[in-house]
Amino acid sequence: MSDLQPVRGTHDLLPEEMRRYRQVAETARLAAECYGFLEVATPIFEFADVFKRTLGDTSDIVTKEMYTFTDRGGETITLRPEGTAGVARAFISGGLSQHLPLKFFYAGPMFRYERPQKGRLRQFHQTGIELLGVKEPQGDIEVIATGVEFLRRLGAWDRCVLELNTLGDTESRQNYRRVLVEYFSAHRDRLSKDSQERLERNPLRILDSKDEGDQRLVGDAPVYSDYLNEASRDFFAAVRAGLDALGIAYKLNPRLVRGLDYYCHTCFEITCDELGAQKTVLAGGRYDGLIGQMGGPETAGVGWASGIERCGLLLKEVSAARRPIAVVPAGEAAQLPALQLAERLRRLGLAVDLGYSGNMGKRLKRANKLAARAAVILGEDELAKGVATLRDLDSGEQREVPLDALPGTLEIYR
Ligand code: ATP
Ligand code: MG
Image (cartoon, rainbow, N blue to C red; front, side):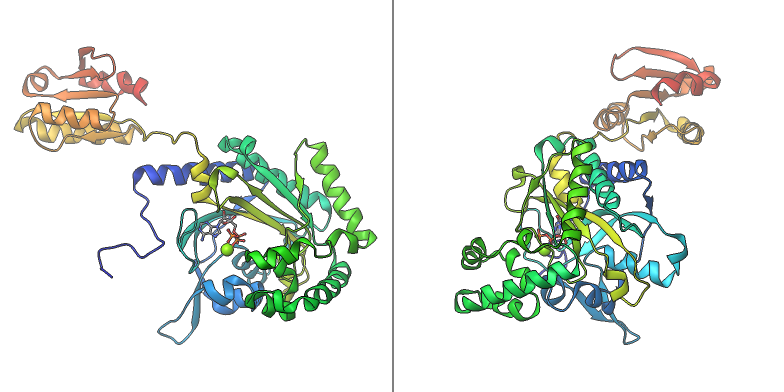
């Protein structure tokens, strides 16, 4: 271990990576805004209980992945592993139930102690939306449509697949749970150790197991759709009809689950094969029981979260940094006037890079490196005449411009 290395599974966002990050997050925010979702931010850490209560004792996140520590006041604190629990906590502690329905968007870092690999980090970033207080299938449709529109704007949707399933209502889930436990109990010794544990506490999660032996058993397991009651089938049919009406293609995947009790009805994932093993870029579903389970008023909820790093890998092109104007003083006497000129231009909203040191050639080289659009050269001759030399760095054209006229002339480089 070296103090000078980043912690495993974390990485720095240097300017180009930061632009990639911004492009994804901003695209998500703007798409979400078009669907009426307003941006919020909840704290990056919460009491550990917020996640334990919402994610359940058996989830991978709670059993293996949380960054939990005791703070100096003796409180047990967790760095948030996902965004929904914090939003639900904010909804409850802010007493927001009078204001339903609520539509929230968020973006920011999440922390999970995972095995780092491509597309899997310990500090990663998500965008997400939560729609609270809508129990009708319209909510599911709109939430999915928002995710699709986000990926469309990223230029990635045509390379993605939307997988869809339903978990039904509580009654359906209990029916299914019963037959699943029966089925897997009969094959108990062939289950992985993890799944033997899940069998008691969270049998639906077995369907999601990555273990090959488990997968073989799962292949022959009873299928959820056979155990859905009529209300659940109707709900799912309405969601599908809505997606069809919007021309959003999907693939039914009866093995898609979210293992926790409060998940119900629609669950979905958007994947892109280009990404290899970690190919899920967006995942979500309906969680009507969550806020009630946390101790708040029973409130319907549906939402998704999407990994910013994985979405970033799907970008064909990352926008370039803003091209500045280089102000280049020549000679000692020009230093302060150049400083003042740069300041004046910046106040007008222009991006200006001020050449700090070195000869003219060196300063112009830096201007080129920054892809500056123009250089404003200020030397003693120019100062005496009250002008600056303006050089267009794309065309190479050069002319003198009176200092007073400079802001107007530079408008085209905004
Ligand atoms: P996985 O099956 O990949 O572990 P998950 O079910 O844990 O995913 P969610 O909690 O649904 O993932 O998170 C939603 C999205 O956040 C994922 O689809 C993925 O894009 C992203 N994501 C989750 N964990 C990580 C991670 N450790 N590093 C990078 N991105 C992640
Ligand atoms: Mg995971």
